[in-house]
Image (cartoon, rainbow, N blue to C red; front, side, top):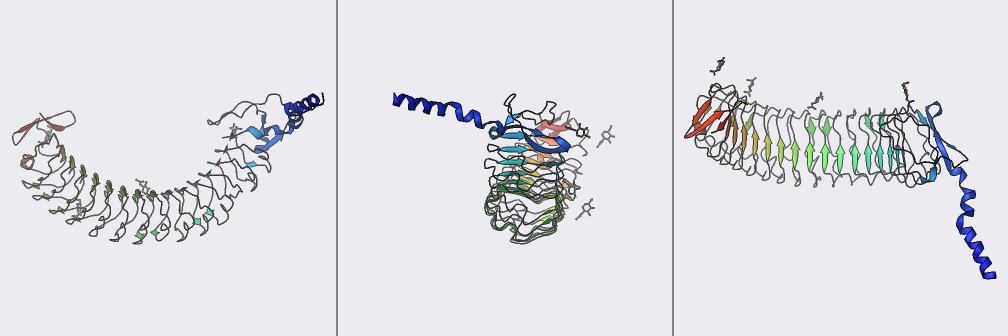
Length: 458
Ligand SMILES: *[C@@H]1O[C@H](CO)[C@@H](O)[C@H](O)[C@H]1NC(C)=O
Ligand SMILES: *[C@@H]1O[C@H](CO)[C@@H](O)[C@H](O)[C@H]1NC(C)=O
Ligand SMILES: *[C@@H]1O[C@H](CO)[C@@H](O)[C@H](O)[C@H]1NC(C)=O
Ligand SMILES: *[C@@H]1O[C@H](CO)[C@@H](O)[C@H](O)[C@H]1NC(C)=O
């Protein structure tokens, strides 16, 4: 009897007596009064529901009542919110994702996320933040793009040590204080694109050796020094659309894992001969739209994995022999829009795997015998918009796999140089003296024009 009575009371305790008396204050709803976000407790459990995902930003429904300890995601986009009230997220112990994009928020209380140990993602894209400073030991992903931040201060991220992804795209950042990222030892992706950053402090990344992706495009950088040296795991480095004119010879030397380096649309005139040394893993080097005048010997010598090299839109006047030696894996070489006046025998040696070479809009007037040797995998050769008037027989020697040649607007008088090219299927000749021919005889082969004004092997 005694035993049964004890078990009865244990069961009563386990089954619900405690829960039903404790729960009430865990329920509530968001309030948007005066465009300030706050949480209001309610003492009923009626109408409890999960917060709906509102990624489209439109929610005509009245605010739902919910149990704050159970909520894992909050999406409150596009509601004209201007601030968050202190204490709004107290007790949101399960909150993982908070998205307040596209509001007008200019003030966030520093401790409003403190203690929310599950919080992983915070997003405040497209708000009005001029200042930002929060405490969160758990947040991994922080999105602050399209706000009004002018400066990354030493304190801004001092209390968010777990951040792995930080996005500051499209603010008005002019300055990064030297210790701006010094607490972010786990940082993997840093986006600083589309700001007004003029200089990078030399030690800015010293404490963030894990960065893999670094986006610095669309800024006002003029020179690159030693800032990237600690970034031993960097894979992508975007520096396009800046004003970079000077690059220290060792700027990229420790970036052993770097796969993509984009320096396009800058103001580079000269490149140091050692600037691309040690970039063993580089796959893509983008140098188009600069003012580069010449390429130092062996500048690409270490780039044995490079598959894409874009040099179009520069001021290169010549390509010396062996300049591309070492680029064993290169597939794609763009040299259009330069001022190359002549090619020499050996200009393209070493490019065993290159299948696409573009020399559009240069100043080539003559192609001498053997200038393309080395390009034994080349399938497509584009020579449009040159003043090309002389093509020596033997100019295309070695191009055993060439499939397409484009000579639009060239001043060529004969096609004799193409006669020996066994695999040639397509010849583009718009704007040449052959443009009105419907059929072309090249050696023993006959090509017929198609509707795209290219001549195809019949
Ligand atoms: C936000 O403000 C605009 C302009 O005053 C108004 O048209 C819009 O309905 C408001 N949106 C919400 C969700 O209150
Ligand atoms: C190059 O940069 C200029 C300004 O620096 C910009 O206006 C232009 O759109 C950029 N070009 C490309 C292709 O991004
Ligand atoms: C290349 O051709 C352009 C246009 O014809 C001309 O303005 C330029 O001076 C030439 N450059 C060289 C290096 O010959
Ligand atoms: C091709 O034909 C057009 C139109 O008949 C003519 O104006 C042009 O001069 C011709 N071009 C050549 C290279 O013969």
